[in-house]
Amino acid sequence: AVFQEEKDGELIVVQVFSGSHGLTVSASCIAPLAPILGRLSCSLKLGNSAVRLKQALMLKKIQKVSDEEPQDGFMLIPSYLLPSDGNWKLRICISRGLTRVTHL
Image (cartoon, rainbow, N blue to C red; front, side, top):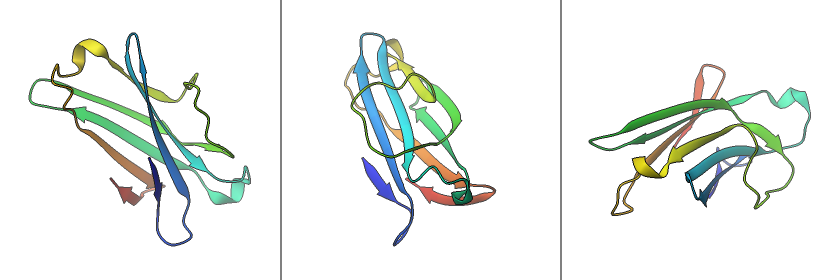
């Protein structure tokens, strides 16, 4: 999924990869490598009545989207934590410094 902060804002890409051990979730920012853009952080939360899992990370700046699983900067959701009915909810919060940018 691709999200945009506001008109002309950064593009945030959230990818979910299914593997033998569970799901790998990553979030990246499509932007030039210029340092003046600042840094974005991300909080990923998986939750249902029985399980809560949270991961915080800094968004990587990328120039193009890849279909390969990330080597770092991701959240691993083990398959044994996923509901058997396949119905799960992931909450994503993107922040810039202390200001909340997007709440998805």
